[in-house]
Image (cartoon, rainbow, N blue to C red; front, side):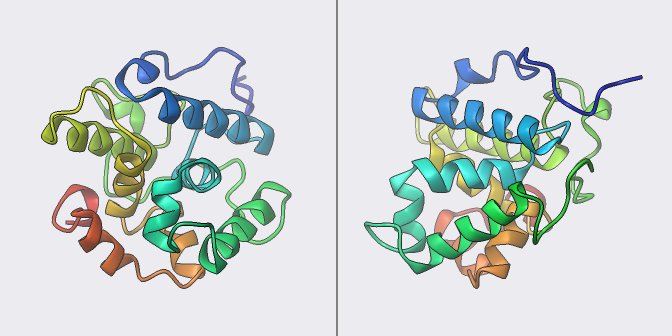
Length: 179
């Protein structure tokens, strides 16, 4: 029988070598949050939570220079989730249907939901396109926003974010699962 709690060993070994140090730290936080929440995989809401807590560039896309009402509302939804209220997905695998299950993907990322793995791949692609060696937080945020059916986008919408406009600003319209 498989435990619903992720092991203490990172299942996504290798991810940290492909992202900036700051984004790697956010991934570690998302992994811890998933384990604490009793989730078997990191999902896009875990990633969004870590990005909102740590990445000023993501704040600026939503509220300006300092975390404002929209970021506060988003963090409120995500904190409610982690303490068992509000948006409940605990113990289920995030799958927007936009990508095949991780086990069906060659080179899939174990310990990541299909939508989170797709967001990570889009982040890497964005970094390569701009000639950067490593993906940054805003790249991962764009990857999350690209999948209009993922949990992270559901949280953004519930907080009143116009995700279509956000996707257009981030250049994810027509890319990834959204397009």
